[in-house]
Image (cartoon, rainbow, N blue to C red; front, side):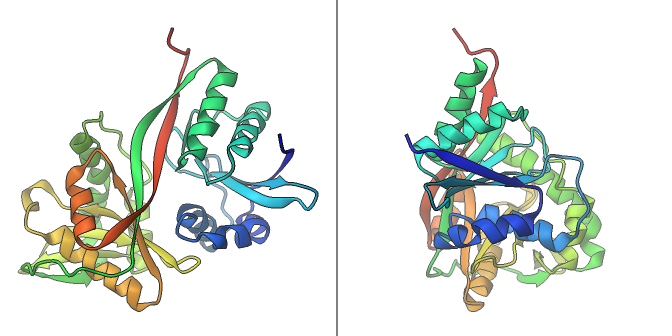
Length: 298
């Protein structure tokens, strides 16, 4: 088995300097890692209360970066993100995490690497790993225009803050219910999250007769890749094509910038998957959110 070394840091600039070229090789697959590191770098030096670190997985005499991971998620149970890497590197990463005593009980990331990582971590802890969410990463190369619908897109303004704060909080709860999972509110999608993105021009609404009926967010482009989401329509406004219309509008804007639009879908929600594929989004890779059970079932 190849011998691996691990370089961890709490400084996103150090991580990007070490692993940026590796991430740029597959920028669509690296969208979450790149977005997180750049976002923290641009947000200032304040340290959050939750875990925040990045790690580069190095192999060979030349200490080549062959994998990356991070633990920066601002919501419980503070899962890791595991990027694609060789299986034996994922096993070694799990042993490194276990040996350093991190209280990791969940991880998201690209399959199969995150599955290999969590299975090894489970073995070391006498637990078992199970899939909490099965997601899929999509990329749009050519937009298929949706059918016309009433209303128009507009960027949000400060007077939208209260409404969007409520919608952001409702997003994850509704998504879990639609997928048949017990609701788990994402506490980081709060007023501060909403205000920051509103001020950056990253939140948009679809408006009909002056009334907002849907909101979508996008990220800045990192390594030439932008990500769209969350995407949320309140229940009373669903079924009119508002999500398709606004996602198409934002996707068109990303393409016009010369960047690559991406988004994640929950495989337990056939409606959202159908909407995005109808717009021309194509599957890139499957990802999963895995968690540990303790003790392992008999």
